[in-house]
Image 1 (spheres, rainbow, N blue to C red):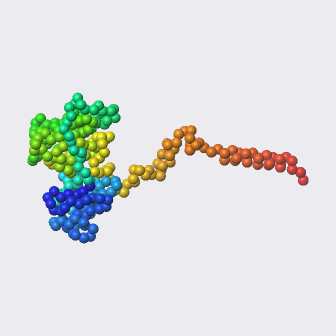
Image 2: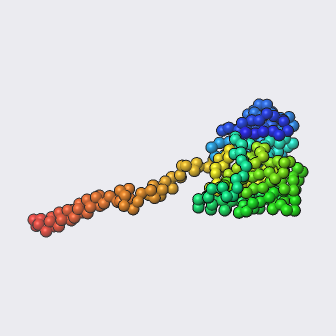
Image 3: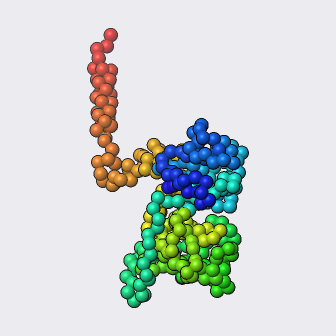
Length: 286
């Protein structure tokens, strides 16, 4: 990922593994100095488990119009406001470009798994009036401010029929419906895109995320981060033994009990009992 500054306060900064501090101080671990901010206004961090933002001081930080007091997990496309400074989180690569739509008669049939995954695809609102609401994509959806739009969006720069999101040839696609329509996907300004699970769409002040498990791979970012948690690829010790047993079938040597030690103990006990019996029966009497 990288951090961009739409109003030109600073050049773009790559957010690689590690931390990037943003504030008014030039030193003390702050690598992006912007006048008017707290000495260390916020810290952006990125690692194998994703990206997040921490607020080390009592500073004003807003992510997608929601105030942040201590920590916020980030995804590509988020807009972060540090006081009066805007910071956009962009994915490393723009989404796949979009070709002209093929006629329905030429589209390839979908396999059962893909068809099922696409039937469950939906948009979830991240800000504005649609926050927290889910919009199924079982049919084409028109986004805009007009009365005929399926998803009504208000705000400057929005057209009556701004964009359409639909399923074409086994993929979720976003297309403009007006020459003046603009939008962003994962922070990148595009004129249409093929979307995958986790992509964030920004239309004016409105934001949505595509929820479509099994449809492509998330663009630019890994899973939702949880700093300090155990890596998913390393099971906890308590779960390691059951996992190993699950990999071994009921008839494999790993699950058979070695009973040879038990048999030896039984034989030794029997021999000891016989010796004691012989001693008490045949021993000479005084």
